[in-house]
Length: 77
Image 1: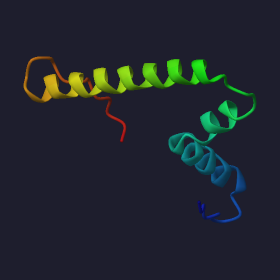
Image 2 (image 1 turned 120 degrees about the vertical axis):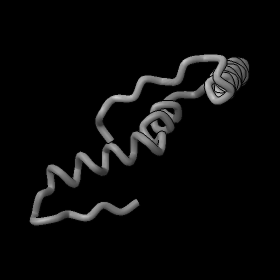
Image 3 (image 1 turned 90 degrees about the horizontal axis):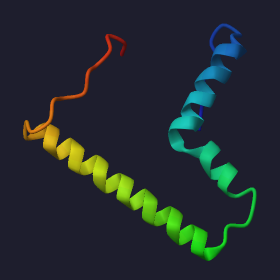
């Protein structure tokens, strides 16, 4: 992962780096590796993640088909 420091603005570069790490899921990964996770807990967590992914995909599919109203977007981008 690479972040450019412009005009010796290290604080801005750190913010950008943290945002990139957050998006990649690096912090979540580090937190999960801190302690041992029992196999049963791992199965339950993975099952829950799969259910969330499936619900999200179904929600997006319904929005594309016009069954649900689209997400409200803020003016920022």
